[in-house]
Length: 77
Length: 214
Image (cartoon, rainbow over all chains, first blue to last red; front, top):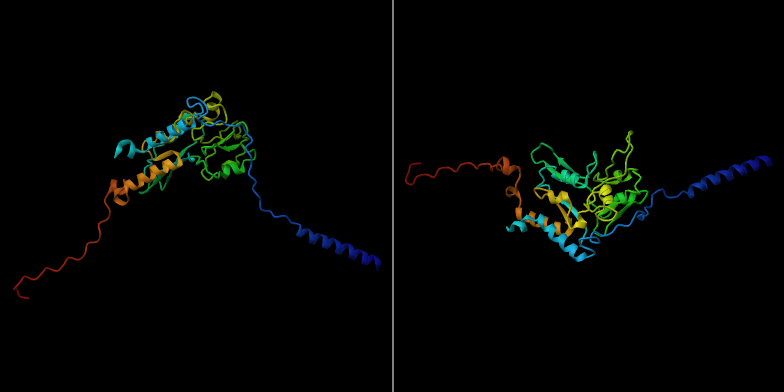
């Protein structure tokens, strides 16, 4: 009788452990963590010649050059 | 300055592939890799539209999110670039990109993928600007020369606009408002026919002559 009782206690204990294991389930949705760039640093486009670090001049040149794509301004309609 | 962007005007693109050729020539792109391509929708059907597609330099780029070695970075001009010395050619970025921008050269006899290659907005990569190493790995750095991407500058119809996002958006807005809509727009109805005439109303009954017999 005691053997049976012990067996039942072990079985019920094991079942309780298995059922409780379900409560410990972790969420399976991936949490995205932003990676950090691991490569070599790059220099800005205005750093080297011909701009030699003159950011304003570079921006002005790029802006003027962008307007070359605007034929309404280029042709002057 | 805002972010550097591309904008393709589908009303103007004539599928000449000039942008594709300009890109390949300017950056010495290897065989089998196309950093830019022209996609046509409803090819051969009246009203077909073409659009030039490459890396769109996303503000929240999915390629950057999935890269297992974190070899992507965004320059202060908003150009998405990567370090080829770090790339392992896994191809995750290719699956993540909605535009199919990342390309992989065949790097061996058994189809092993080489390091990823993609549009750099003609901004080179993380090597000394305009150096031989930068040209060999990433192509020409036109931004450092004060120029814009070769594809956009070469576009014959100026369908493909490239540059500061605010500026090209303004160019496009002015263009769209100037050309109007409907039959004023250059298109199929202009080239191949006029719009359908409205159905003719029934002819009015002739008026009875004054003094005539009914």
